[in-house]
Image 1 (cartoon, rainbow, N blue to C red):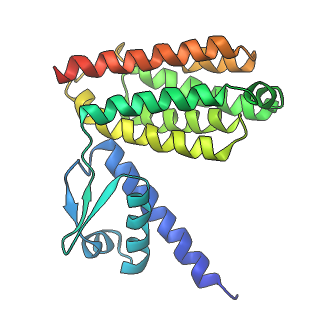
Image 2 (cartoon, rainbow, N blue to C red):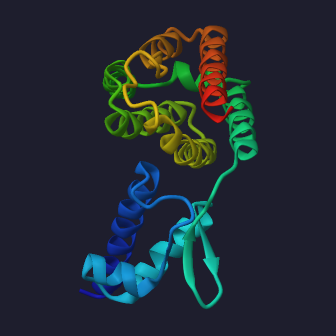
Length: 223
């Protein structure tokens, strides 16, 4: 079939990028870690081309830096970066719920809302249990689907990028706490119900409270 090899390579590129992104978020590829295309290609048992393409994708997402003649390095984010991420998250969500958001939420299908509710339930359950690894996956899916309800893919993609970077910075700090039960924000369910009721003001207030919680928690770990 014409183009089948290109499709396979694109799929492999996406799979490698997703796998490496998960490793970075979870801290298994920690900030500052250096590696080469060859190293990753050998680890995954694939050719260099899709690996190089995947790494460039992660560079474009702000997760890796290219080091001339050395390969790649996992980007290191500072506390100042994190505060800027929180500000960006706030502005993005404010934009989500402004002007066209009410109509977009009015048009949201029952199936889409049901899917967001499922993500909210799983994320909230993981947060209450202090299960960070499970929380991250469901939390990212929750926010992707919630943003998608607004109907603007650029907003959804940008929010996802900032949220991934936020997790990369916070995960190593959170792991120092050991037992995370009762310490992580778990208001996903309350937020999705506010959205389902088209209560934009309530949804914005919940997101503001969430961002304040994130800052307070990390402030306590960086003092």
